[in-house]
Length: 411
Image 1 (cartoon, rainbow, N blue to C red):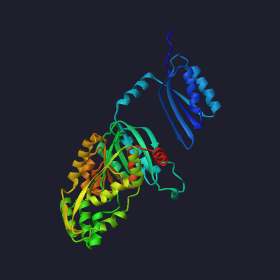
Image 2: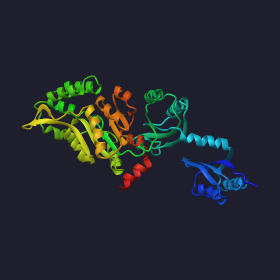
Image 3: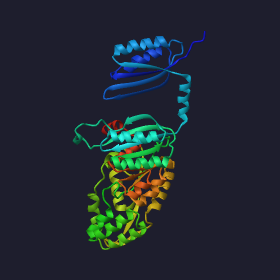
């Protein structure tokens, strides 16, 4: 007589302790069961374990009886659910559907945020496969650390309207003070190797040309031109020429004093330590100036710096520049060039910036991120970070705090 092979889903829940999973899977092993799927999570020391198995010897009744007695002994709850072959086959066929990773980052995580994300996913006809927390456990005393929270959703299916979905995410992020990354799951997402940063208002919390202008006594004039350029209202090259001309006669010595007091953006130290640790090639592609880019290169061990060079004569700025202007188009070209030199597929690259002149490289990179960007830039970038520091990029890359901080501490 042919033995019946039954498919059964078991769900175990209760207080987590060492040995629970081992004891239950030993029963399945002893009875030669085949594991078709398995997943486990621990939330606040409470275990949630799911195992989908197939009995190969027609002894599912004996297996369930042993599991029931063992769960009683371990003081955990267990539920059994038989699965038909048709239902299992349908589930297997779902594996071929598109997969996406949705990451949210914020200072605080709220139920409204999770509910809002989940609703948009549902409205688009997609299914959540997995949810995991990327940030460390959150202390009740929020002064105990810099507040930040990140959760990653693994989602399966094809959006009914991808553009509408991204627009809904953008509106929700503004309404609930969070950032949302929506990426297609692929091997490239897990293997990023090159990251290119804008410098001013990205790696540092200022526009260096504004700092130079203040010391030259033309601060208000230059700042107005800078802001208009970042909003995309003035051609970057023309604005650059106008601003450089206003710096004529400034003593070169002030550049060192500015460099030594650059206000570094929140999260940069942690981000750079992790990127170097995991082997990223790092570049600064800036419409700012080489002097300051080289200062950051030395400070963080950055691999490439491309920026503008100010002309100097007799220890004074002439109001002119040397060489080709690093504008938006040039940034995108340099991103492609460095990727080629480093033998990196463009889909393995990341670009981060805040201004309109960063959009070409942001749209060229495999992962483009607008950081604390102007509205026009944010609207045109697929990913953005506006609520936390630059180390929020690590969550968009899929890194967890538990791995990041342990590696940095043990370095």
